[in-house]
Length: 258
Ligand code: 4AZ
Image 1: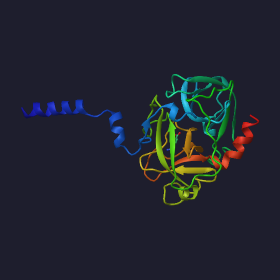
Image 2 (image 1 turned 120 degrees about the vertical axis):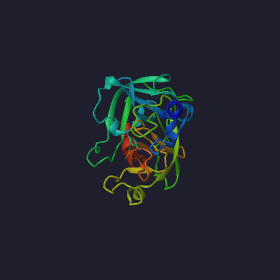
Image 3 (image 1 turned 45 degrees about the vertical axis):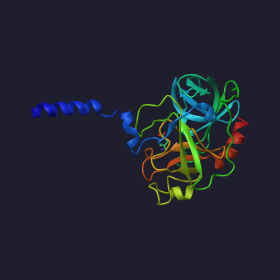
Image 4 (image 1 turned 90 degrees about the horizontal axis):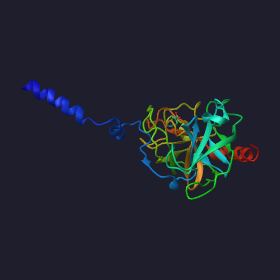
C-alpha cells in the first residue's frame, strides 16, 4: 500500500510540477522581471532580423535611420539577409518589414573592448510615422545615477534561454553611472566597464540576449543601447549599455552621411 501511495505521489508531483515558464519569476536570472506590452507604448522600438529571425533590437531615429548596437552587425551580415520590422508588438508578424540600404558600425568599435557599441542602419525606403512608429530623440546628457529608465525588447526572459517571447516586453530599471558601475560595488572590473558605457541595476530586472541594440529610455529620450552584461538579472552584475549622450555627435554626423 505504502509503495502505491509513494508511486502515486510521485506521479501527482510530476503532473503538478510547474513548467519552466512558471518557474521563471522565481529565478534570479530572469530577464528582466518584465511585462508584455504593445508597440504603441514603445513606438520607437524595432526588431532587426537576419534571414527572417529576430536578432537584435533597435530604435527609430528618423524615417530612414535606425540606431542599434555595433555588435549586432559586427560579423557583417549581407544586406540582402537583413530586415527591420517596425510598428508591431510581435517580432514575427505585423507592422512593416523594410529592406536595408546600408549600415555603418562605429569606427572605434572593436578597438577598446565593448566601447563604442553603436551602429546606424539606413532603410531602403522611409518609414511612415504613426501611433505605432515614432522616432526617439538622442540624449544630450547622460542620465543621473538613480534615474528610472525603461528597457524594451524581444530578448529572452531567462539568462541562457534559447526561446524568445514573440510579444514585446519591457522593464523599469535604475540607471547606474559609469564610475559607480565600474567600481567594486559591482562584480565587473574597471577594465571592461569604460568610457561610452552606462549601466542599469535593479535586482532581478535586466535586459538579456536578443534585447541587444534596443532602447533604454528615460525622460522621453534614448539614453542607452543594450550592449552586454554577465548573465541577465544576476546579483551584482548590472546590464551595460552604450551611453547615447557620449555617442550622439557620432550618430548625428553619421546619420547625415550614411
Ligand atoms: C546579450 O547576450 C546580452 N544583461 C545583452 C544584454 C545583457 C546581457 C547579455 C545585459 O546580448
